[in-house]
Amino acid sequence: MNRCYNTIKLSGLLANLLYMLLGIGVMCGAGLGLQAAEPNTPEHTYFVKSLVLGGTICMIVMFGCYGLICNLLCVNLIFTLFILICLGAEYLQLHHYHNPSHTTQGSAWQQLELAWHGLDSEPQLMHQYEATQHCCGHNNSTDYRQLHLLLPASCYQANDTYQQQVFPRGCLETLSHSQRYIEHRDKLFMWSIVGLEIFILLQTAALSVLLYRLRQRQRHARRQVPPGVRREPRSNHVRAGSRAQLLHAGDV
Image 1: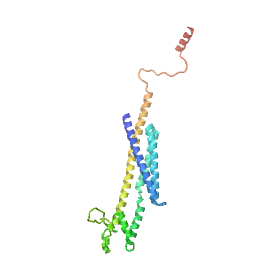
Image 2: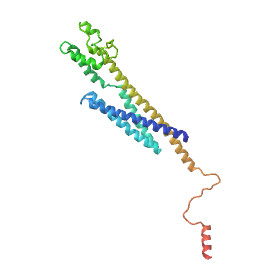
Image 3: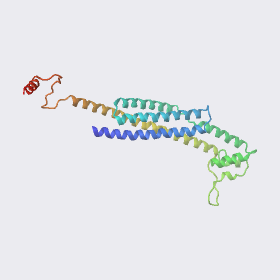
Image 4: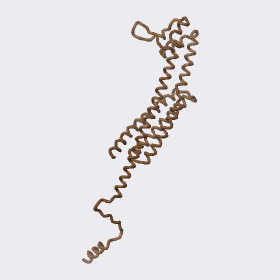
């Protein structure tokens, strides 16, 4: 049982270390997002919540590592309760998922619409947008042909060959693909945190059970009397035989 306990304890420490690294990653990402987000927006609120979540994860990990190192059963049980609370919060966050990129994507979509509809007056806005997003036209490159316009240089891919290739995607499709990629990345990161929390929860529960059994064994071993040894009650007074020996030694 001791080997099993030590193995689970070591794996628990490693899992908590990885959990803390994920929490630090959440805090770093939220800090960078707060610098770019505008105040009093859903995006800003999302990054503030992520920053609080990352700090809470780091505090919980330090508390759990203290219980693992010191072999404290009560601390491990409280740590298990904290993990359950974090799991509930993560489930609610996944169930009511709100991607902060919707605000950014909405402003980017507005920029695209303004640049495309202002193609006659300010074509450099659309050309600059295409060059940065690596796209061509609103839907695709045929939009220029329908308007009887030549393809601008921003629609061509930069390569070393003499044959120029047009970007296959339109700017609207590029924005949609970018939004789906961000949503998939965020959900994958959140599910990885949830999976690690479930793993730590199972480890902590098993460790608490083993620690309780070890404590029970130690208490039972202390109560048992070794064979051939007679346990006598302790007394503070001097026995009669010892008193007689002391008196005899005094007479001599």
